[in-house]
Amino acid sequence: MKVIETALPGVLLIEPRVFGDERGFFFESFNARAFREATGVTLDFVQDNHSHSRRGVLRGLHYQIEQAQGKLVRAATGEVFDVAVDLRRGSPTFGRWEGFALSAQNKRMLWVPPGFAHGFLVTSESADFLYKTTDYYSPQHERCVLWNDPAIGVRWPLDGAQPTLSEKDRVGRLLAQAEVYR
Image (tube, rainbow, N blue to C red; front, side, top):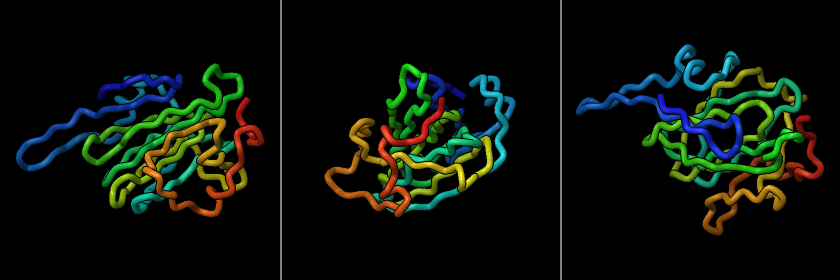
């Protein structure tokens, strides 16, 4: 696999080695030893999640203030614009974001370490989004930063349209009022 460092320390874009021919393709979407050796990440994954959404659905920006989750994410079908936001108060990149196109076609994955909020926007007709997490879902610790907080300034590729949001995402907190990591 090829690991690409991003502007946010710890957030890694991963391009798996894909073997393809006239029959189709094959790649290891996860191999614990190879992942650890390539990224230096020694956390174990404990939960797999699968989300299916239609075009224009925006999920995020989510995180857990306790039981913080690292996430290895990818689009198994379709395409998403995937975003990580640094919520580590002492970090030089606190409040900064970076976004990446993840698709079934490019097969890229993103490692979002604990300490970051995460979200995505479906940019294809629909998408199946898969993610492995390093801690279990904990509803009492879940938090949400407002997807369009001007202090963060994520440039979602919405082309003037309004995203489809859950109630939780509609009422997320501004970064200035959010509980963040120390």
